[in-house]
Image 1 (cartoon, rainbow over the protein chains, first blue to last red):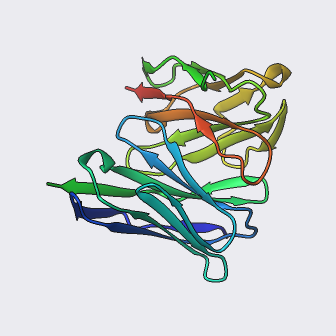
Image 2: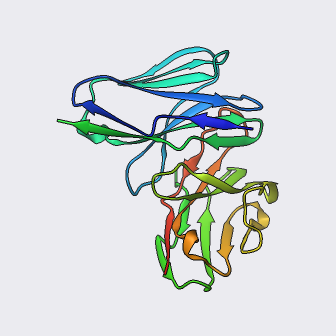
Length: 108
Length: 114
């Protein structure tokens, strides 16, 4: 079967760094996406990884290890507005398979 | 660039009634997705179109849900008859074809079945 696992919820402090992990088992792999979803809003695209390694984009970075079926999203210098759910999605052949999302709570 | 348009934003219906949602994807996007998202969960794919053909509808409850994408552009999703457990946000997304193509989401329709 096809499966994506993420922690359900994480808490971090404003100004700190947090790492959100995602592990996947899929029949095919054509890339991994991270999306941010604020409560009551639609998901918005954050990053895409298809090769192993780290992709950096401002305060957000995403890492991929295809051999381990593993990715993480790293958020630096956390701000209160980063409180949201973070969704990991894998493109497997023509399908886009979604994790349940990690709810990130930022405390002052 | 205009985004994915969905309507209505909110809908409240009684169980056993029917409801329809409309989606207009980003111009040029061949792939269109309908997702159901229940509070606290990730999006669940209901149906995926490429142009006006169905690519994947394996999780669509076909006894009550139907969807079409006439002319490969706009799409409608219908529920008839609705059940209480259909209460959710229905998200439409579109993308170009290709592995790296990100999906762009509409604002969604929040459906409440009472």
